Image 1: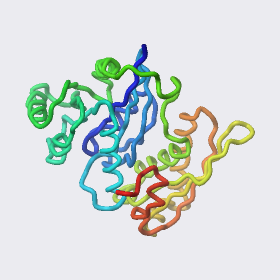
Image 2 (image 1 turned 180 degrees about the horizontal axis):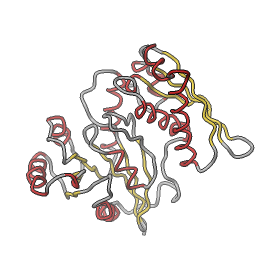
Image 3 (image 1 turned 90 degrees about the vertical axis):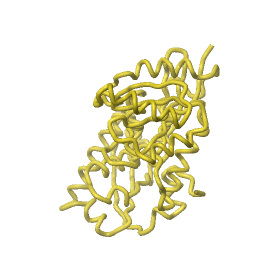
Image 4 (image 1 turned 90 degrees about the horizontal axis):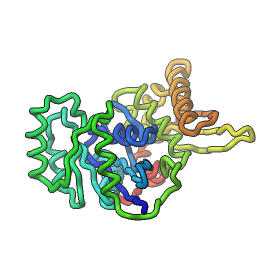
Length: 293
Protein backbone atom coordinates (compact mmCIF):
# COMPACT_ATOMS: atom_id res chain seq x y z
CA UNK A 1 0.00 0.00 0.00
CA UNK A 2 1.41 3.37 -1.03
CA UNK A 3 0.41 6.88 -0.04
CA UNK A 4 0.58 10.07 -2.07
CA UNK A 5 -0.78 13.56 -1.51
CA UNK A 6 -0.26 17.31 -1.76
CA UNK A 7 0.81 19.52 1.15
CA UNK A 8 0.74 23.28 0.38
CA UNK A 9 3.08 25.59 2.29
CA UNK A 10 1.36 28.97 2.74
CA UNK A 11 2.19 32.10 4.71
CA UNK A 12 3.18 35.73 4.56
CA UNK A 13 6.22 36.84 2.52
CA UNK A 14 9.53 35.90 4.15
CA UNK A 15 8.07 33.26 6.50
CA UNK A 16 10.68 30.83 5.09
CA UNK A 17 8.48 28.77 2.72
CA UNK A 18 11.10 28.30 0.00
CA UNK A 19 13.83 27.51 2.54
CA UNK A 20 11.54 24.87 4.06
CA UNK A 21 10.77 23.30 0.67
CA UNK A 22 14.45 23.15 -0.29
CA UNK A 23 15.44 21.73 3.11
CA UNK A 24 12.76 19.02 3.06
CA UNK A 25 13.51 17.90 -0.50
CA UNK A 26 17.28 18.29 -0.14
CA UNK A 27 17.40 20.16 -3.47
CA UNK A 28 17.47 23.75 -4.65
CA UNK A 29 13.99 23.88 -6.20
CA UNK A 30 12.62 27.21 -5.04
CA UNK A 31 14.66 30.38 -5.13
CA UNK A 32 15.56 31.90 -1.80
CA UNK A 33 16.64 35.41 -0.87
CA UNK A 34 16.46 37.59 2.24
CA UNK A 35 13.96 39.79 0.36
CA UNK A 36 10.21 39.27 0.50
CA UNK A 37 8.06 38.08 -2.43
CA UNK A 38 10.83 36.09 -4.11
CA UNK A 39 8.64 33.15 -5.17
CA UNK A 40 6.23 34.16 -7.94
CA UNK A 41 4.40 30.93 -8.75
CA UNK A 42 3.62 27.48 -7.42
CA UNK A 43 6.70 25.25 -7.12
CA UNK A 44 6.28 21.51 -6.55
CA UNK A 45 8.85 19.51 -4.59
CA UNK A 46 8.55 15.72 -4.79
CA UNK A 47 9.71 13.86 -1.70
CA UNK A 48 9.79 10.13 -0.89
CA UNK A 49 9.33 9.15 2.77
CA UNK A 50 9.10 5.39 3.21
CA UNK A 51 6.21 4.18 1.03
CA UNK A 52 4.75 7.69 0.78
CA UNK A 53 5.24 10.28 -1.94
CA UNK A 54 4.76 13.74 -0.44
CA UNK A 55 4.10 16.48 -2.99
CA UNK A 56 5.12 19.74 -1.33
CA UNK A 57 3.73 22.89 -2.93
CA UNK A 58 5.69 26.10 -2.25
CA UNK A 59 3.39 29.05 -2.89
CA UNK A 60 4.13 32.77 -3.27
CA UNK A 61 3.85 34.79 -0.06
CA UNK A 62 0.35 36.19 0.38
CA UNK A 63 0.22 39.99 0.52
CA UNK A 64 -1.93 42.91 -0.64
CA UNK A 65 -1.68 42.99 -4.46
CA UNK A 66 -1.18 46.21 -6.43
CA UNK A 67 -0.05 45.18 -9.93
CA UNK A 68 -1.37 42.49 -12.25
CA UNK A 69 1.77 40.50 -11.40
CA UNK A 70 0.94 40.78 -7.67
CA UNK A 71 -2.65 39.65 -8.22
CA UNK A 72 -1.48 36.62 -10.21
CA UNK A 73 1.01 35.71 -7.45
CA UNK A 74 -1.59 35.87 -4.67
CA UNK A 75 -4.04 33.91 -6.84
CA UNK A 76 -1.37 31.21 -7.35
CA UNK A 77 -0.88 30.99 -3.58
CA UNK A 78 -4.57 30.45 -2.79
CA UNK A 79 -5.00 28.03 -5.71
CA UNK A 80 -2.11 25.96 -4.33
CA UNK A 81 -3.79 25.88 -0.92
CA UNK A 82 -7.24 24.98 -2.28
CA UNK A 83 -5.90 22.09 -4.37
CA UNK A 84 -3.94 20.47 -1.51
CA UNK A 85 -4.84 17.56 0.77
CA UNK A 86 -3.28 19.47 3.65
CA UNK A 87 -2.20 23.08 4.26
CA UNK A 88 0.96 23.86 6.23
CA UNK A 89 0.53 27.37 7.63
CA UNK A 90 4.09 28.58 8.07
CA UNK A 91 4.64 31.45 10.52
CA UNK A 92 7.90 33.24 11.30
CA UNK A 93 8.00 32.80 15.10
CA UNK A 94 10.76 35.40 15.41
CA UNK A 95 8.78 38.26 13.85
CA UNK A 96 5.86 40.08 15.51
CA UNK A 97 2.50 38.61 14.50
CA UNK A 98 1.14 40.89 11.76
CA UNK A 99 -2.42 41.60 10.68
CA UNK A 100 -1.60 40.13 7.24
CA UNK A 101 -0.61 36.80 8.87
CA UNK A 102 -3.79 36.83 10.96
CA UNK A 103 -5.83 37.46 7.80
CA UNK A 104 -4.23 34.49 6.03
CA UNK A 105 -4.92 32.20 9.01
CA UNK A 106 -8.58 33.29 9.13
CA UNK A 107 -8.99 32.53 5.43
CA UNK A 108 -7.74 28.92 5.66
CA UNK A 109 -10.71 26.65 5.00
CA UNK A 110 -8.99 23.31 4.48
CA UNK A 111 -7.42 20.74 6.75
CA UNK A 112 -4.39 22.57 8.16
CA UNK A 113 -1.36 22.24 10.43
CA UNK A 114 0.43 25.14 12.09
CA UNK A 115 4.20 25.19 11.54
CA UNK A 116 6.16 27.75 13.56
CA UNK A 117 9.47 28.44 11.81
CA UNK A 118 12.75 29.92 13.13
CA UNK A 119 11.95 28.57 16.61
CA UNK A 120 15.69 28.11 17.24
CA UNK A 121 15.89 31.93 17.48
CA UNK A 122 12.99 32.38 19.92
CA UNK A 123 12.83 31.77 23.72
CA UNK A 124 10.39 28.88 24.41
CA UNK A 125 8.28 31.14 26.63
CA UNK A 126 7.30 33.26 23.62
CA UNK A 127 6.11 30.31 21.52
CA UNK A 128 3.13 29.31 23.68
CA UNK A 129 1.32 32.70 23.54
CA UNK A 130 1.93 32.86 19.78
CA UNK A 131 0.53 29.35 19.30
CA UNK A 132 -2.48 30.17 21.49
CA UNK A 133 -3.32 33.31 19.51
CA UNK A 134 -3.04 31.54 16.13
CA UNK A 135 -5.11 28.52 17.19
CA UNK A 136 -7.92 30.89 18.22
CA UNK A 137 -8.10 32.17 14.63
CA UNK A 138 -8.31 28.79 12.88
CA UNK A 139 -8.61 25.11 13.62
CA UNK A 140 -5.22 23.42 13.29
CA UNK A 141 -5.03 19.64 13.63
CA UNK A 142 -1.42 19.76 14.79
CA UNK A 143 1.32 22.26 15.66
CA UNK A 144 5.02 21.84 14.85
CA UNK A 145 8.05 23.83 15.99
CA UNK A 146 10.78 23.79 13.33
CA UNK A 147 13.79 25.60 11.94
CA UNK A 148 13.97 25.38 8.15
CA UNK A 149 17.53 26.73 8.19
CA UNK A 150 18.99 24.26 10.74
CA UNK A 151 16.64 21.32 10.10
CA UNK A 152 15.38 21.15 13.71
CA UNK A 153 12.01 19.40 13.96
CA UNK A 154 11.78 18.52 10.27
CA UNK A 155 12.09 14.74 10.68
CA UNK A 156 9.07 14.74 13.01
CA UNK A 157 7.13 16.93 10.56
CA UNK A 158 7.96 14.61 7.65
CA UNK A 159 6.96 11.47 9.56
CA UNK A 160 3.59 13.02 10.39
CA UNK A 161 3.14 14.22 6.81
CA UNK A 162 3.82 10.75 5.41
CA UNK A 163 1.26 9.22 7.77
CA UNK A 164 -1.34 11.89 6.93
CA UNK A 165 -1.27 11.50 3.14
CA UNK A 166 -4.12 9.53 1.55
CA UNK A 167 -3.70 6.01 0.20
CA UNK A 168 -2.87 6.44 -3.47
CA UNK A 169 -0.48 5.29 -6.18
CA UNK A 170 2.47 7.61 -6.76
CA UNK A 171 1.70 10.49 -9.14
CA UNK A 172 5.32 11.04 -10.24
CA UNK A 173 8.35 8.80 -10.87
CA UNK A 174 10.14 8.12 -7.55
CA UNK A 175 13.37 9.82 -8.64
CA UNK A 176 11.71 13.07 -9.80
CA UNK A 177 12.44 16.16 -7.70
CA UNK A 178 9.98 18.64 -9.20
CA UNK A 179 7.43 19.15 -11.98
CA UNK A 180 9.05 22.46 -12.97
CA UNK A 181 10.23 22.39 -16.57
CA UNK A 182 14.02 22.75 -16.80
CA UNK A 183 13.70 25.96 -18.82
CA UNK A 184 11.61 27.57 -16.04
CA UNK A 185 14.10 26.33 -13.44
CA UNK A 186 16.90 27.99 -15.42
CA UNK A 187 15.02 31.31 -15.52
CA UNK A 188 14.34 31.15 -11.78
CA UNK A 189 17.99 30.54 -10.90
CA UNK A 190 18.98 33.59 -12.95
CA UNK A 191 16.29 35.59 -11.16
CA UNK A 192 17.59 34.44 -7.79
CA UNK A 193 21.01 35.86 -8.64
CA UNK A 194 19.37 39.17 -9.57
CA UNK A 195 17.87 39.20 -6.07
CA UNK A 196 21.21 38.32 -4.48
CA UNK A 197 23.37 40.73 -6.45
CA UNK A 198 21.20 43.82 -6.93
CA UNK A 199 19.26 45.91 -4.46
CA UNK A 200 16.29 48.20 -3.93
CA UNK A 201 13.58 47.83 -6.58
CA UNK A 202 15.69 46.20 -9.32
CA UNK A 203 14.77 42.55 -8.52
CA UNK A 204 11.05 43.38 -8.36
CA UNK A 205 11.23 45.23 -11.67
CA UNK A 206 12.83 42.30 -13.51
CA UNK A 207 11.63 39.03 -14.97
CA UNK A 208 13.56 36.27 -16.73
CA UNK A 209 12.45 34.13 -19.66
CA UNK A 210 14.34 31.19 -21.15
CA UNK A 211 14.37 31.76 -24.92
CA UNK A 212 16.06 28.49 -25.86
CA UNK A 213 17.07 25.32 -24.00
CA UNK A 214 18.97 22.85 -26.18
CA UNK A 215 20.79 19.62 -25.46
CA UNK A 216 24.12 19.47 -27.32
CA UNK A 217 25.58 16.27 -28.87
CA UNK A 218 28.10 16.05 -25.99
CA UNK A 219 25.25 15.96 -23.43
CA UNK A 220 25.74 19.53 -22.24
CA UNK A 221 22.93 22.09 -22.25
CA UNK A 222 22.91 25.45 -24.02
CA UNK A 223 20.55 27.97 -22.40
CA UNK A 224 19.71 31.43 -23.70
CA UNK A 225 17.72 33.64 -21.33
CA UNK A 226 16.44 37.20 -21.52
CA UNK A 227 16.10 39.46 -18.49
CA UNK A 228 13.28 41.98 -19.00
CA UNK A 229 13.45 45.18 -16.94
CA UNK A 230 10.93 47.98 -16.65
CA UNK A 231 13.40 50.88 -16.67
CA UNK A 232 16.62 51.83 -18.44
CA UNK A 233 18.31 52.55 -15.09
CA UNK A 234 17.69 48.95 -14.06
CA UNK A 235 19.27 47.70 -17.28
CA UNK A 236 22.45 49.68 -16.58
CA UNK A 237 22.61 48.33 -12.99
CA UNK A 238 22.12 44.73 -14.14
CA UNK A 239 24.80 44.92 -16.83
CA UNK A 240 27.24 46.70 -14.50
CA UNK A 241 30.50 48.42 -15.30
CA UNK A 242 32.15 46.70 -18.24
CA UNK A 243 29.49 43.97 -18.10
CA UNK A 244 30.81 42.65 -14.77
CA UNK A 245 27.46 42.36 -12.96
CA UNK A 246 25.68 40.39 -15.68
CA UNK A 247 28.74 38.15 -16.05
CA UNK A 248 28.71 37.35 -12.31
CA UNK A 249 24.95 36.68 -12.38
CA UNK A 250 25.53 34.24 -15.26
CA UNK A 251 28.48 32.47 -13.61
CA UNK A 252 26.60 31.78 -10.38
CA UNK A 253 23.30 30.81 -12.01
CA UNK A 254 25.11 28.46 -14.41
CA UNK A 255 26.88 26.71 -11.52
CA UNK A 256 23.57 26.19 -9.68
CA UNK A 257 21.82 24.88 -12.80
CA UNK A 258 24.68 22.51 -13.64
CA UNK A 259 24.47 21.10 -10.10
CA UNK A 260 20.71 20.52 -10.39
CA UNK A 261 20.78 19.05 -13.90
CA UNK A 262 24.01 17.12 -13.20
CA UNK A 263 25.58 18.12 -16.49
CA UNK A 264 27.59 20.92 -18.04
CA UNK A 265 25.61 24.08 -18.82
CA UNK A 266 26.40 26.95 -21.21
CA UNK A 267 24.35 29.99 -20.17
CA UNK A 268 23.94 33.14 -22.30
CA UNK A 269 22.13 36.17 -20.85
CA UNK A 270 20.59 39.17 -22.59
CA UNK A 271 19.04 42.24 -20.89
CA UNK A 272 16.13 44.08 -22.55
CA UNK A 273 14.12 47.06 -21.39
CA UNK A 274 10.35 46.49 -21.61
CA UNK A 275 8.24 48.99 -19.69
CA UNK A 276 5.08 47.57 -18.14
CA UNK A 277 6.04 43.89 -18.51
CA UNK A 278 4.42 43.19 -15.10
CA UNK A 279 1.01 44.10 -16.58
CA UNK A 280 1.43 41.94 -19.72
CA UNK A 281 -0.46 38.65 -19.85
CA UNK A 282 2.12 37.03 -22.14
CA UNK A 283 4.99 37.87 -19.75
CA UNK A 284 3.05 36.49 -16.76
CA UNK A 285 2.19 33.26 -18.61
CA UNK A 286 5.86 32.87 -19.55
CA UNK A 287 6.84 32.77 -15.86
CA UNK A 288 4.16 30.21 -15.03
CA UNK A 289 1.40 32.50 -13.76
CA UNK A 290 -2.26 32.64 -14.74
CA UNK A 291 -2.94 36.17 -16.01
CA UNK A 292 -6.73 36.03 -15.49
CA UNK A 293 -6.38 37.49 -12.01
